[in-house]
Length: 217
Ligand code: DC
Image 1 (cartoon, rainbow, N blue to C red):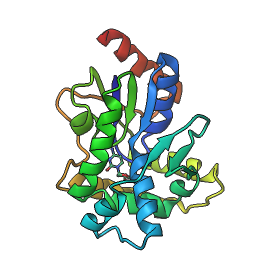
Image 2 (image 1 turned 90 degrees about the horizontal axis):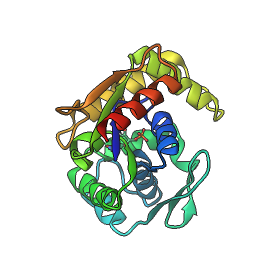
Image 3 (image 1 turned 180 degrees about the vertical axis):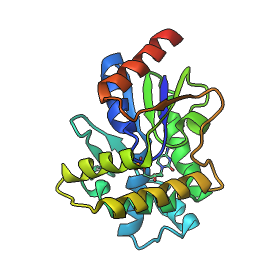
């Protein structure tokens, strides 16, 4: 089992997917689960500030993952792969995920998947809360400018045009919220390997993670 943690735009998903493919692990995108929860709340008129209501509303939702690139994501059987990738839902997910009842609900579902073994886990809190026992735990990061460039590129490939400075401010705000929330904030856990990926290609980062996984065996 491998867990990759880190701030927005660090390339966690890209790297985690590639590592999962190389090592034959199942890929668990925990952020996609928070995004599904956010979408469900938005559709049912629950705001990101209403933590208790959000957790109650989403208690029975079924989040599923399929194949493909991008990996298909299902909310109660509906394909929401594109719907959860908008900047608005990203923001909603970040805001609603500060609430403990929401986190409890998601962590319970995530740990049930982890218990099945052979998982490549990706997301903020995977190394500290969801799977602190994972033999390979990585905090993947990069400078704010680099992460903004990557996010811009990512949005552009989906036809979403963003202003650099605006996006940079949004990412900074997201970092601040994710790392200052009371319940399981984004942080570098003890014993976690930090990879600063400025100037590294995706392949180089993937090689590094695979090497760490091989060494841990
Ligand atoms: O990784 P992402 O951008 O898809 O995640 C969206 C938001 O979900 C993120 O800003 C914070 C929240 N999240 C979380 O709190 N814990 C996780 N393990 C993954 C995501």
